[in-house]
Amino acid sequence: MVHIRFEGRSYDIAENHLGIAPGMNDTAVKERLSQHFDVNRDRFVPYIVDRRPGGDLIVRPEAVYG
Image 1: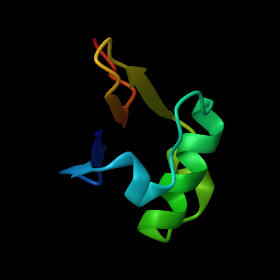
Image 2: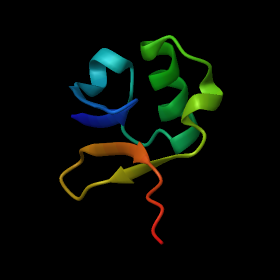
Image 3: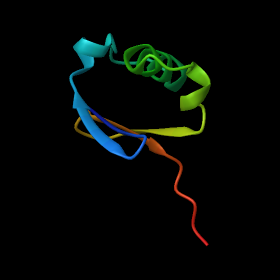
């Protein structure tokens, strides 16, 4: 499962629906997400791809503190 926080909303989408395969690097994951959301790939450049031990991905904006 891919958990995505994008433009203030949360989405849970299956990897196969997005065309994401195990072992894909962050750039490829962000490319698939930009295609899915029909936005320029630059929109996902500042996003973090967090790979969880169970295999899920969390894609979110970088947290800024302070």
